[in-house]
Image (cartoon, rainbow, N blue to C red):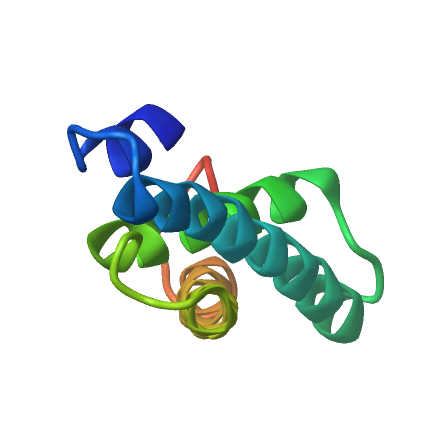
Length: 103
């Protein structure tokens, strides 16, 4: 993911640097957010949930990795993770769908 987001600038400079930083910040906040929401909703955080939070943060920041500030990348990671958590919870608890990966 770092090669894709940071390498998309095709140069070493400010755009690549901010893309690298944002590619780290969004999944970090996504992982913390998912673990916290798991703890609130399910009663305990899980490692699989933390990994899902990191992936949802990466997916959320990819289109804007080089064009937003790190604080906005953190907000994007939190917002994207909340939406993914809600969708995953709905599929798991409210629908008749069987999703092996919880994503």
